[in-house]
Image (cartoon, rainbow over the protein chains, first blue to last red):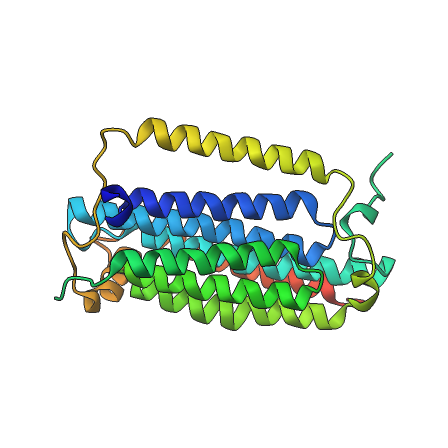
Length: 111
Length: 177
């Protein structure tokens, strides 16, 4: 009970792992490409939560100016924005050609 | 510099919102509902960032995700027709294999966390609190300052990545160039 009531780094890590697994389930089982991209956003946010929690841990050792984890989280957010823009552009091009958004009908390179 | 109040209550409440939002994202038939659940999850996560003394990252999370990326998602959902897609099968044929793989990954996480968390003292909330009004300045020091910062080059590379992403998105989405 004591470990449950005193929130530590591990609580945030467990929450991040749960979100990561939800994102993986979404990527692996859904057919709609839009929802697969949203699941990838869930995965990136789980990683960001871990980074910021570890940044707090690092602050508790090296003082309040040691914010490397938060800087990394900002870089990950930048990557997420770039990935969403390019992914949705590819999705629009694909929908224009094949009139579908289902990922298992993307089979031009299959043999 | 006040110590935080009622940390377990807020942590577990926000965690519950995030988990329910994540489950709704991957189970809803309508993509618009998934997008709204994802916004809820991201806002709860911004509140968790505030609890971790990261107000700048929390602000960036709200502005960029809820304001930028989710608007992009909703635009694309509007452009493609979802009425036909909602009547189709939502999960692919390999969903059982996917669930098994995700369960294996979860077992790996549980094994690693139970094995390594024994005997390690990580930070405990409430033992130390920081002033939040220096957070943004400290991040800017790390990013831009010549002496303290080592992320200047990575910052420039990130701006190049954004340029490439803009050009790539325009090239992909344009009908003819």
